[in-house]
Amino acid sequence: MITFLDGKLEEKQPTRVVMNIGGVGYEVLVPLSSLDRLPPEGDSCRILIYHHITDASQVLFGFCTDEERGLFKMLLSVSGIGPKTAVSALSGLSVRELKAALVESDVKRISSISGIGKKTAERVIVELRDKFSAGDALEALAGADAAPGDHRLRDAVLALLSLGYKQADAQKMVKAYALKLNEETTVEDLVRMALTGK
Image (tube, rainbow, N blue to C red; front, top):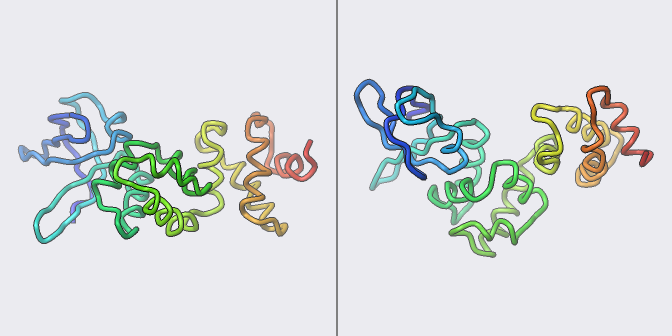
């Protein structure tokens, strides 16, 4: 199985790239979320691969982050979702937006993805929403409010969970204060704000 390709980006088109690895061109299908992160044609790069093998064909799907590839694999685990639909999902919504839609059971948003109807969207939600940790879920719900790599939100949710709050309640309580974070705010401050409303 191919895990990644490291070489020259020979061609770059919407949903498709060609990687030149030692003189051999590999066609790789990519979601738009990954395409935007790739360098210009002719530059070197590394692309993570999901090698999809069936009796009829072998197709390489490429991603710029482990998070994208992981979510792609999760989508494939749902009955009725094939690789092309999974790529379409990652092209239509960012990883964070897709996770937030799953955590919030947003059927309308997920069914807006090409190739996913209402019933399939409901099945995707039922099968995947509980596969995210409290930290993953909060990070998705926090969206752009939190700085990348800011683990204080996740740690505050985990603290509230340890106090007996349900995951959904803890996430809502902490998310309400995500915009008030500054460099001096500690996890303890965040938990205090969530508990007292101040």
